[in-house]
Length: 123
Image (cartoon, rainbow, N blue to C red; front, side, top):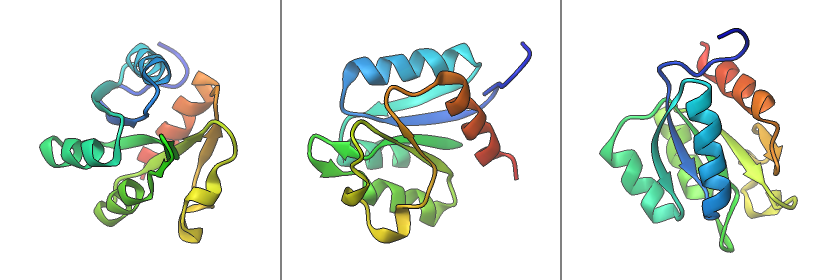
């Protein structure tokens, strides 16, 4: 495959909308990545992180009115890169320290998302 690839990457999706989560899973699989888990809540995301290692995460900012910030802060503490997704400019749900991190609006362009995930995992 030419172009961006997620070969060998284990990715956590934190998204409360099943259709969006499944679409992200399809994109990630299509680019060679593996979805380690799909979590619709902060609690399930933290449980998934404790259960299996991941390389990167895609985080919906607003999980049914709850900020994903605790997951983002946990990932930062562990040195695991991530990007945010937002459906309607809900960055105000994030603490100021997280507002300048990579963020994509839904619907997201698959290739742009994959390229961003690649850039974040290249150290």
